Image (cartoon, rainbow, N blue to C red; front, side, top):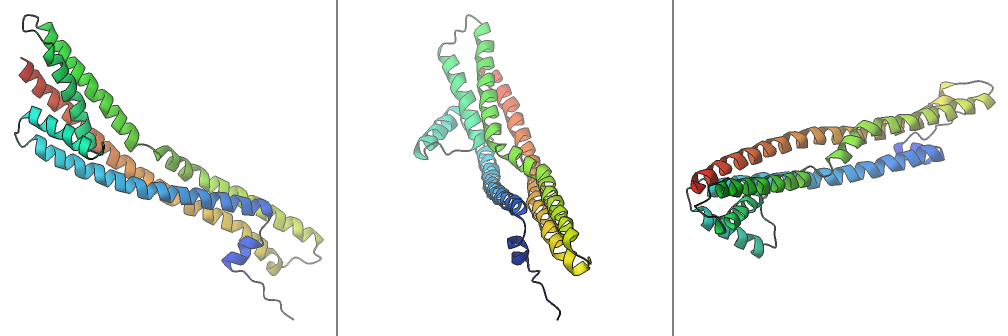
Length: 233
């Protein structure tokens, strides 16, 4: 009588050894966390891009900078601090500039340079904080993309070792006897690739988008510094 073995995906997972099952569970948990960060980062970068474009239109519309600063402060208070990254960089620099302007004396021209340096340092500090927020969890995605295939491969090697050890007690080794053990082992590699590939694609995409935002932020800092310098003198 020919025995038909159940080689379904679920049956292969449940019949795998304990260590292989633990590796599969680890990879599935990592994949779930990876997808969570991917969706969150997608929405965060999309919102940051839209907020940056909106603020750039308002900034370059030719309005008064002090009025724009007051509007930004009011908007931050009304929305509990949920404003755009570029707007926060602007308020950091403009706020520092206005503080220095209050104590500025036209008799000492060095005060103007110190005032501009203070505004530039405030914007650079705000820029670093914003970049730290945008780049959060990217290291996790990079680690998942690089490590998951090797973790899955470890599960595959362990499963194949068990499959061949089981053949030691068999008088005649056949493909039907080896196939279930090898199939169980290969699932670990498949799950590892399932976790790694989206993480690598998402990491590369997010890095590109964040680099473009960083260039826009840095360009704004330099252009706004030039505007403040002209106003100071």
